[in-house]
Length: 220
Image (cartoon, rainbow, N blue to C red; front, side):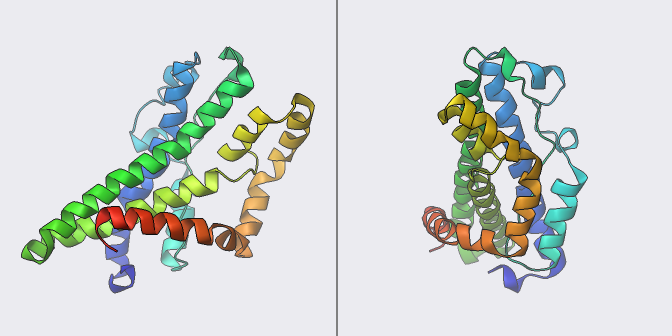
């Protein structure tokens, strides 16, 4: 459906879903960390959905913008990581795994919210297309970006959230060795993206998840 839109229309449709998907993801980490005893994010004023507090120019603006302009059909990004100090947790590795999961869970919840918004647009239908179409298109964008972020962040590549979960499961020594990969994590992710291996890895789970959420939206 997005192919019908002009570039300006695509930007208008994607901008809010991308910004909210990325910023709420980070706020979720900080909020859950606070529940487990770490107030670092709160003290630095990061428990807010104000995007200015979270914007990373490369990850929040440039990368998503380039992916949108080049029409890859695959858009993702990131915000400035919310600071979390695991030393404040009672069970550092276990609690850090829960904090890590909070990000992808927030994206799934947002995907549900965008699906419901799109459902409203579908319900309105042709009777008021100037209202229904923006709701449907924005809902589709919201579902897509949040599912992509949830799936990417669940990959076990340090420092993605999936690696924090795996660290909480592995024996201490093996977890330490595994986390040494973190210095190469961003490079690994870029290589996977450039070679389209990332697309291949995510293709089936993304297809399944999109069908599920588009059905909820009444689009399928």
